[in-house]
Length: 158
Image (cartoon, helix red, strand yellow):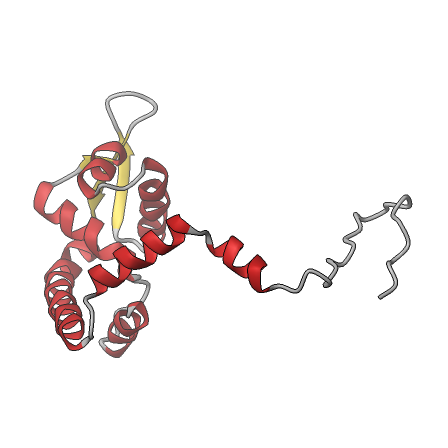
């Protein structure tokens, strides 16, 4: 699904934009400048994730960061280029939600129900446990040597 959004951006000649940029750019357009902490909180994302996204947005010329009220705080604001993209990103966001709802309606079970069932199944028994149950016990793991490790045991014979 994400690749479809990436393809749309390429089709429309919008370079340097990734789908994860849309929500922060839209939020900044509606709120005005925010600190990274405020932006993270408003997006319900971690400070670290938003900090990385802001760095990528800055590299693409979509936002600027300015010193905040103390040396540790950075305020994020849209550049003219970022502001120009927001109407398209808002339209794309609405179209993406409509397309996801259409896809969801065409499935025998909703994506939300599927995701909940998948989570429940993995809580009951982890994916690692499931893999191990299908991995023959007789298959040995290859010995992984550290570079320059002269004390490694000789390879096991089959």
